[in-house]
Length: 267
Image (cartoon, rainbow, N blue to C red; front, side, top):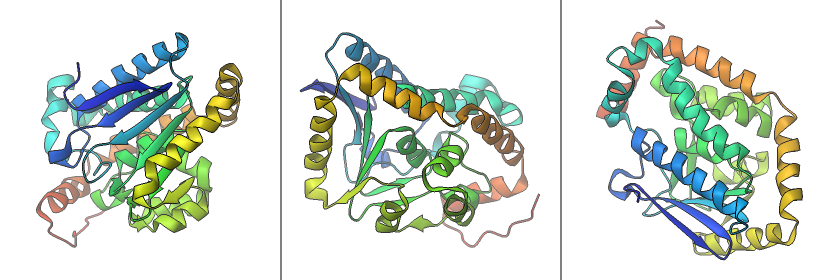
């Protein structure tokens, strides 16, 4: 049914696995659209009483390297040649997918290994829980491309770890030590890679002991405490301006060619 992800329903757990291993599970438009469809499947499985928990994980050596910078032509086909001049439609599409993940009736667990960068981190932040292997590299490097996290990464990270620490993660663009991320509350658990699925299954079993409707409503109440949508709108506004900047073009070229440091122009 899908080309770039795998889905499975087992023991009341709905699995979505990234399966673009040759590209380090880089997130292009197609894989995001497939995730969107799989979330609809997961919601249906919950409504039918078949699923109680969602796992988002990945095949291969890493969870995901983030957005696929080599697949920008996908957005041309979807939104036209001038898509960068009117970025709101693109940003909104991706935001809506991760908002669907955040609002899913099922409690969701993101299971990370290898590295989890950029858009992949934003996906993890839309989940209810994050479990990472002990050597996982995690970071939001967008500012080193001349842009900002615009698919919920900024607003959700502030919710999780507060504005000062979120600024350190986002404004530096550097990878965060995984144990530091756990201490800050960005990650729920850090475990050896061999124990990753055991820990995820342990948490899933605890969640299944609670009444499903109570879990659903408890999740909704907690999520609604902060105004996420206003933050998403602000992210979209900022990214629309940055995508048209000369710095973004230079940042993408440097990222693709490994030509550092970038000579930023500030425009």
